[in-house]
Figure (cartoon, rainbow over the protein chains, first blue to last red):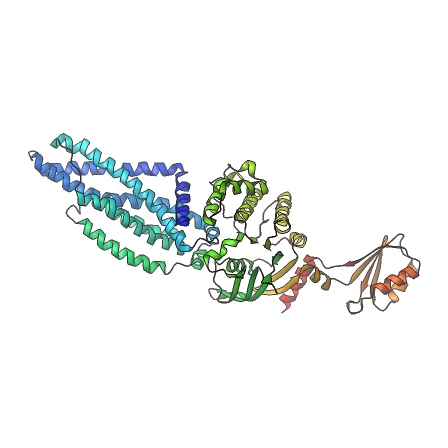
Length: 245
Length: 310
């Protein structure tokens, strides 16, 4: 565990040494703004004379969809950026080869790098999510209903437990691919695909009535199987030979 | 017989369909400074990667300090500098070493980092980013990282490549200090034949995946020497002495160069004492007799030419 944490801590430190990381976090806040407009549209659809109770119900449904989809959108976007530090750059600069010649096992390195990408991404996302809920309330919900509406418990569990777990699983799978393929950037398309899918769902409220908690639990199980299969492909030889410039 | 510190025994390795190592065997004894030579693409880096457990041999046995190197924990007593220095350029020297100290589980890391940075003369630059370092400084830092956990054996893949002459001298001094003062076993892969000749006691020469030459450097130099003897005299020898020398059955050539006579001898019948007696008998006053040994460059060129002819 010590080695896993050492690898993760180094990578996180390395990423946060760079100013562009902070710009990226600011960008995460920026792209969550359209949700504000999304809620106004939902209120518009509810009608001008809708009761406070109806608007609160609309707000709750909106927050449920937002809390279920927005975190994964933002997490994947940040993962794309952070994984460049954790694996892509290390392979290109051949620092990974030196790390693998130490007593660190490949699995420890894999887990360390997965944590280094997943943990800051989830942390930044949770921060953005908290701010988004406050802004939605202060900007739209409270002026119209007079009360502060919070997402329901299931949404919170989905957003704060299932999404981080799912992010970890996706990052782990992408990390294996980045470690063993000769063009690790290609693996990033997995992040980008998830990001766009969930971003569309967030801004269009396309999946407002879906039960994401169940979907995520099913995907988590599937991703665990995928990671188990992928981990069998993980050998030092594959990593070294795919690191050739 | 004591177990070797590093050993490759009948190792074969293909990369794709191309055989890169063919029945490669060599041992590095404890305390040796072992020079590993060969042209580009000969298989040196692949051998080193196999030795460090980064590549798995298709067949053969690899052992490091008597242990199976494919077991991750067994690499704890091994230090290395790879072809690429493997340093994090945006981090400081201290941060680079602190990271590896945590990987190796070094006790009292701060104190050890200070010690090791002093040893490689980088203590005053400990908090500078590595990106600001010269090539020589980076290589010294890579050596510091290799020694951080006080390993018993070190594998150094071209540690002086791209370093200026004064930097090379500094690195050489550190390597010699590691071997002689700290008793480390060192495998040194290098293209710099002069460097290998200065520091190594044993060598192996690999070419196209095959070990062409392997043994103690001084023995190889003697056995592959040109069979020449240089005799330094107080005054130049006379023409008659030179003629008489050429009449000796073991002498092939004799050439006068100021106060030195360079005598080419038949390798099968090298009678140096007989030659010296003859010269003394002719009243020649001898100051020094030196047997000319082959230089590593001569050995390297000869072996590679022979291999090309096969």
